[in-house]
Length: 172
View 1: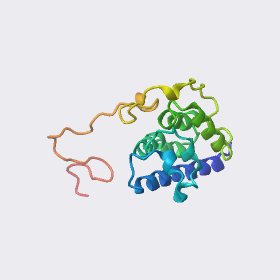
View 2: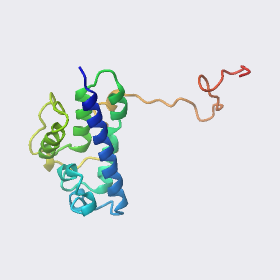
View 3: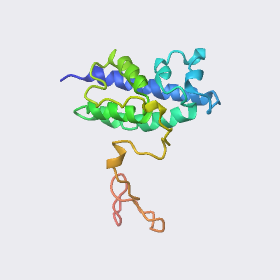
View 4: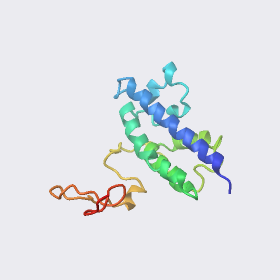
């Protein structure tokens, strides 16, 4: 299957999300709701900003974008695209408890990538009324399966092994 155009569109969208996050952070109003900031002329080109939860702040948006899209560069370079992973991290981290926003976002994405969001279970209704969660303290479905262990002990010698560093004792 030739999916290079889908990959290109997803990469362009990732860039737009990062650009929007950067523009929001430059407003120097981290506690202002994204919906309110999206009315500014400089942000009106980012249609997806109007789809996030009404109370989401600029600071929260930045944190959630980082969490929602961190896998995209690696996934977009894989031989086979994992459609579910690409969509599920975005839904979980950016549209949690916002089913109407997710539905609008999927419709927006499907203008360019026909399969985006397909095959995911329905979000529960009325979820936007639930208490807010701490985006930084919760793991996404993908992160839950990843176990991170420190690669070196704090008091261990700072010895690099393997490429691009030569093996210990070599003269190269």
